[in-house]
Image 1 (cartoon, each protein chain N blue to C red):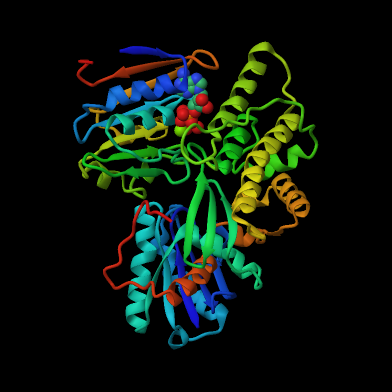
Image 2: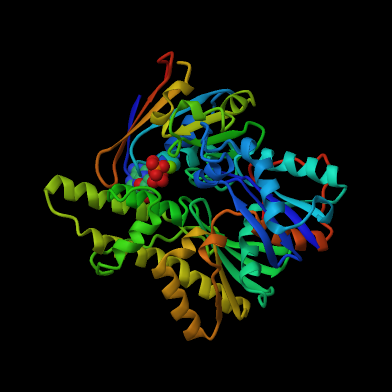
Length: 334
Length: 141
Ligand SMILES: Nc1ncnc2c1ncn2[C@@H]1O[C@H](COP(=O)(O)OP(=O)(O)OP(=O)(O)O)[C@@H](O)[C@H]1O
Ligand SMILES: [Mg+2]
């Protein structure tokens, strides 16, 4: 089954063609570089979130890259929640018209379910049940994936996302944006015990809930005090201590959840999965506990449409299709 | 009015008190540096408005919607480059939806406000103390 899929929930616009939920035939993502190619070197002024201008060009390109004709497409899938409403609507409306024009089913997909499904593209052998930690600039949640379309949130951040904590700390340390990569690079030169950073816990809610704003604020305060007292900040040490603190908060909870649920498999999704400390700690913990770790390659960790095509396939099998009255939603439960 | 809070929960409580009777259509423009407690204040606002939901940082999502009888739209302009991006995020549409809008990082979008907004300015006094100044357009608070 060939699915043409769309993702436009925040900053990226993306279109993909995916076969049977597992094989990516085309995976087009809008970026300044892509824009440059599309317009043959003449880049018009286009706002970062103007998905409308690029979506149909990307769709044509995806079909061409995949080497399939419009009539070969069996269904259309799109992210319908959660996200910036105007952005999500662009994808939803385009997908609706495409499904109507092609005379094929329309499949709505939850954005976070898509991130989890990125693992199916990277690992053909992976099947539920497993625990998935979804970590990105906007999300930090631990999910019990009982089945392809049967899942629930075990815990999540009560304030900032893990990626946001990295980005904002990087800004305070003068490392630029996005900050994940520079913090990661710098941390390799530092001592992870240089600074004693907090590991905030959350009162009430789930034992798997997390909090990162306290870490962000601790970094802000350290930088501020150093400035006032004229001390030099050990930036590599602070970066290393921060990576260690974030990693410990994430890995511990994830391992506990897998243990309690009796699952063999642990998956990580989202852009923060690229952090080398988090990766290394997960590898060590999984080896120790005799569990198998799945972390998709970076390209599949960020927002993309292939993951929507993957999850869309399983939503279709579960009978989750929509009519042309499909709406977009800023928030939506998993 | 100027308040001093000594903990995150005091800031939340102040937000709750502040939002309790806010009329629909109110815009609260929040100003202040990283980690000064804006999100904590809005968490309190939601509670004061009787909205029982998770309030986390909208830095990446740009706007969180907390729906109820009187909804709260929680904006964060941290990643916006200027007021011309307001159109992309549907700012005008939200203003017309009859809720309360709370806007973190209002510094980034000076063109968003028409003078009727309530300004909430945060200053860090120490690691645990925050000065929070609330100024209504008609100075009646
Ligand atoms: N009196 C206080 N009021 C509020 N927060 C406090 C106070 N004292 C310490 N804190 C700490 O400051 C931090 C405030 O974080 P919060 O995310 O609410 O700030 P913010 O202004 O929204 O930051 P950002 O600019 O990243 O959006 C929390 O970690 C909180 O525990
Ligand atoms: Mg905030």
